[in-house]
Amino acid sequence: MARSSSIFTSEEIDLTLDAELLPMAGATSDCYRVKLYGKWFFLKRLKDNLGSSPRYLALLRKEFETGFQLEHPNIVRYERLGEDFIIMEYVDGVTLTEFITTHPDFFNDKDDTGRLLTQLLDAVEYLHSHQVVHLDLKPDNIMITRIGNDVKIVDLGFCYTDSFQDTTGGTERFAAPEQFNGGKVDERSDIYAIGRILELLPCASRYRGIIARCTATDPSHRYPTVRAVRAAIRRRHNRPRRIAIAAAVAATVIAVATAAYLGLRPGDITGGEPAAAKTDTLATPPAAATTFAPPEPAATAQPATPATATAPTPRAGAKPDINALHNKIAAWLTPRFEREFGAYRDSASSQIDKFAYSNRFADFRSRQYRRYLNENGTAPYEERDISREYSKVLLALDHDLCTQMKRNTPTD
Image: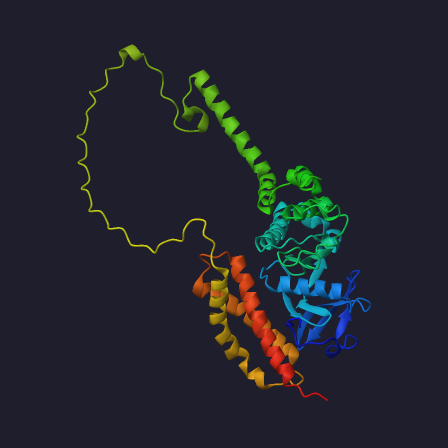
């Protein structure tokens, strides 16, 4: 039986009463703004004709399980999975498409543009560090918040991961050629989309060379990583400053060379003390004999400090034991989960406040993940491994609890 990470069913949310249909619906789903117990959520639900399709239900689950393990300020947070819908954090803002139209002057400021692009690139680089390739980056999937103009990447429906490699789909204008010609997708496929997004900015002329390399047809001709794209953009933003510095240095060199040619001292051209009148060097009395101070005695050698014993380091090239990491997280997280949610085990799923539980669960997930990192650090593992195993443990605990609550529900 498929593992479920939710206790919600479609019938438990009356979309005619509790939700506002949003104009951003796609080809496969409808989008709603839902206010539940005083808090706004974003709900994405498969269209009626696809709600029972195994393929699209699998894609919905892929999107949720991929997004659930991610924790980044510029990527929308995934909260819960229902039978044919996903609940995410609500972003109070507009798509980048609309933002470009309504705020064209925003991109006249290089600092504002640089901050927006930095957030976008940071989020994409974070995805890649967790073995996720988005594959549908476009202005409609980039939200800009109303307060602060911060970036939020949304919609992981077409993403590639190690576990979910069905990457069928994409938006033709922004998708890399290899997404449609059967080629191999990787992080450079997202870099192609970044180039297409840069093309649409009002300040695109600043990035002509960067755009050309990002959107090369051959992936080997593109930037190899998002970090390389960021470095290229930073160099482009700093170019006027570098030119000004070079001009100042050149002016100084010319001034010094001119002074040497005219026999002037630096003070004559920099505003320092005026040069003394020239005298006949033959009439100048000889300089006093130079005296030499005896050398300072050598510092007394300090006794060598004994080396502090250190723990042996793992053998170079050895891979950390992921099973050990999973067990460690399970041992750490399980008692905390039981303290937080154990009281629900005697309840029936039909009796509990499901969205209150959802909010509490989302808060617990973030709070305990930060606490785990603070207490245990990351070494010798990559943080993406810790995040992935943490999500697996938490989903398993949630599934076990939800299954128990369903068993407690009386049947007719």
